[in-house]
Image 1: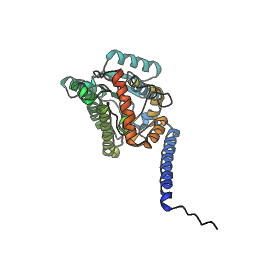
Image 2: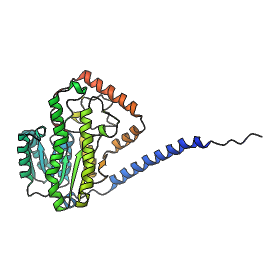
Image 3: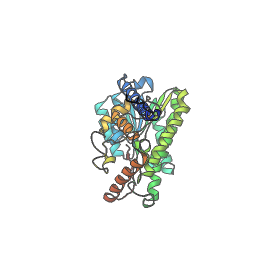
Image 4: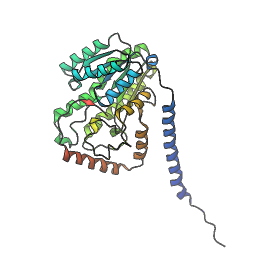
Length: 325
């Protein structure tokens, strides 16, 4: 008679842990789908009649501004170039029955005398307005594809001002009014490079500034939840914008990288939902789940190889503000 075979208990543990991991991933995806199926919010009723968007002249920022206008919000557009601001303002008003105001603000000058003057003009522009939504979208990725010692120090300072100090100053400018009215939403556009992967070599300063936005959003969400202000960091992965032009085709694959318009539709739908850190795009959520199963050392190796490829083909250069992704 054959001896009874019994599976050892230690052999079952990996299967149990694997099943729990799959269940956790499925629950996240189901929660994501549930959010996507919910009825869109009436932003004017929930938050207010006006939205402030930084970096609205291209990429994600432009698409988000148009999407918010489609929801009936008037817009204060904050950007670097007056002509570009006029162009996007004209485009918005030609498509939607909303008002727009523009503020020329070089965000790389935040915390300088010129930046203080621009911030004063911004405060004047929003004074008396029912500002319900702030989208801190403007950001820069240059110098990138470079070792830290190879980049220009002043360029790094400008990057930090645009990506880190400017969103802080913008939030400080509008949150008091939101808190006084008991409603509002602040959206900081972060990056999956600081959340979904273990590191982003040769873009370390960029991912560090985006990590700051995630932590800032968590803190502000806790501070202002009782005052009716939703604060969140949205962390996209790859979006088909100019900022991604230097990445290889594999990274910019259409299956992974939605268009800016497609991403903006998802991003606006998720405003105030999904907690202080969210991933609006379903494609990005699926990729995030896949990356969670990849060891950190493998992620580091792949990201470093891509960074070195960019470094060979496009040497680091001075940063210029543009829409972040």
